[in-house]
Length: 245
Image 1: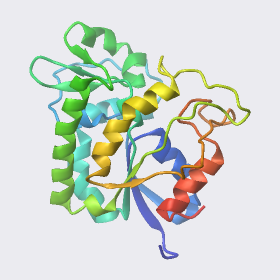
Image 2: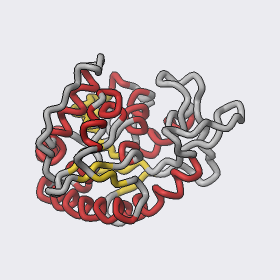
Image 3: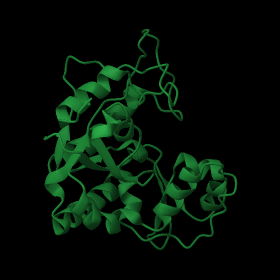
């Protein structure tokens, strides 16, 4: 990397966005941030729903739900290819599964969808596909193939960096981290493994050293969670990516 500004885009959530936050942000331009989109819903049609998002106080949260409804990822990739040096990708937003409708359309079960109250409406019309299940993985693999085709069409595949970082089981004080939405870190890491392994066969993957046990940070700006790490984890990710800290 040179001393000029590095143009980044993100498809993912906590791991990618927080890594950038711990970098020297004066040397980084974040062009696009696409969050709360399962790869499955990104490559299936959007269900015909009128979503009431009035319960969400955050404009960011509303944009993410509406962005998924409008299927922004595939449309954004050719633009990202033109203005980004790197596309960071993580799989945090896969963790809550998707809802699949009879017509083949789907929607990500995101925290924002749950908080909005819209999930109650969706549950009566769609089948829940749990993350880590064979049904979810099959849908995800099909979406991965389409994702790679879109990346290749845009000439973007070589710029993708998938962050394969295990969930932390303990915080920096050695205390066990409580499950996130009912899922313990050890179970999540086991469920994620085949997703990461499949993706690693088609895009470049960044991992931390085998001797580095990720720890969660109780002082993290978003609170303690298995995917909210201590600073040294972000430093190692940034170093592997060649990003300034």
